[in-house]
Amino acid sequence: MKETIVYLIRHADTVKEDGIRNTNEDSQMINEKEILSIDGEKQSESLSKIKELRDIDVIWSSNYTRAKATAKYIAYENNISVNLDSMLCERKLGNLDELAIFMKNKKTRDPSQEQLLDTTFKTSNGESAEDTNKRMNIVLNKMLNEYSSKKIAVVSHGGAIKFYLLNWCSINEDVKLVYKDKILDITSPCLLKLTFIENKLIDLEQLK
Image 1 (cartoon, one colour):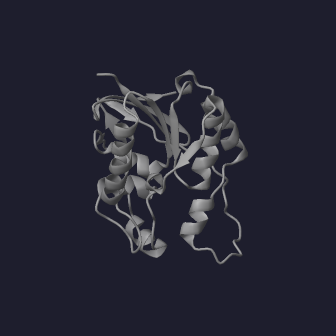
Image 2: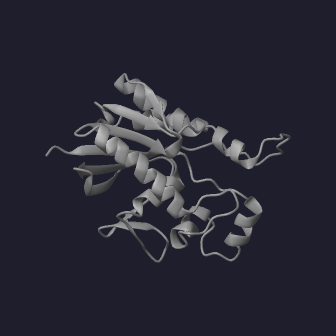
């Protein structure tokens, strides 16, 4: 059987918005519209020129602005269109006050890291790691069936990617994902190569 390759990509660096927000947008809307920083645009362009990302057959992206902005460069280099699926979006944070209570006195300062340890936790209107893992499995399995033996680029988000990788990875004492004794660094941007045969993962590596 031929291999199917999924290049799982976390979007590039985003603009830091620490100033006053005179807006009536809720936190979910703000999150979805977050844009790439200048460095993020440069990172995305450099990423698109990596040899591994040549001859991509299809590219799918979250419908969040920062993911689409990262995907556009890969699409341009391969002369293909970006396909969008909301199933690839970041896990929904939900009620931020409840999230702040959850994060109080936690080991890390990253909610997605802490949700790796407590995979059932979610706030009102939010998603747990298990919720996110289920929808990521649905959309990625669909792609594996539809694009068998192809090279697929998928642009998503840190939390969503981490929770999907729980299918094959363990968590170490520093709350990092580990695959076959190798620590995965899911920062922005990152590029993971997943190799499948008949929907079964046979290799996972992080590309620099």
